[in-house]
Image (cartoon, rainbow, N blue to C red; front, side, top):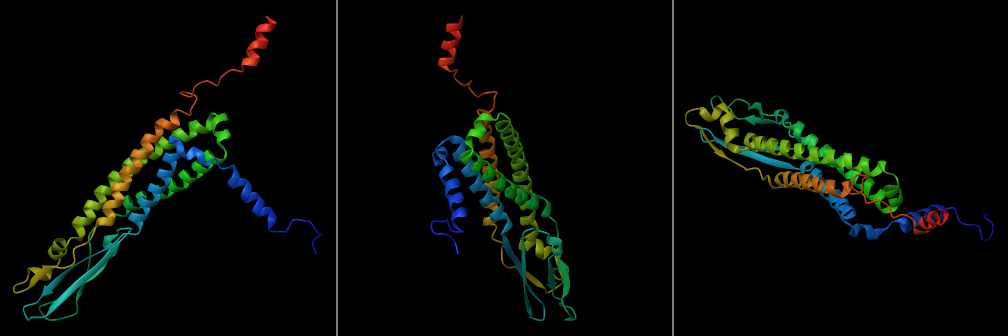
Length: 254
């Protein structure tokens, strides 16, 4: 049994959490540097979330000369390794089993780079925001922290530009490879006499388009943040005011 007046076992973690929360200076979120870090954190979530959770559907219909109709439906999504996605092409000549074909293309490299960059941006923005809100004195007193933050911010701005452009080009190729017309042209059965092939489900690429948009918005955020971080470095930070009392003492000694 614990002695009367002794703190309970769960009080210590609670007091530590309270100290951390009380140490946060929420007013710094009104400053440009703090506000932009919040936007970077949110936009990184939107970027990798919209790309990583995307899934689409394409398809076509094949009507044989005998009158039989087959509907083809194909599901695809992140990481967009289309060459691994099979679909069955009907055989209208001898009514044999459907032949297995695959979509064309591998666009996993730009998609995975985009999502990975978004995850790292999310983690870094969260860590930098906690440092800025809770340990701002370290950020202002240690000249290496602002300089490191500036270098990392420049790198993230450059990588976001590359990632957004690469994923935008990759998404255009995904659209071209998954449109129903491309599916029809890839099926040899559609070239036969008396076979009618029509477009089926058209992929809805709205969420993927939004991911590209957030990619370029992240680039603008990180590029704009470079200026505000640069102002915290010794290159542009105004010199600290000298202590008037120390100046007066120095004058008295002369």
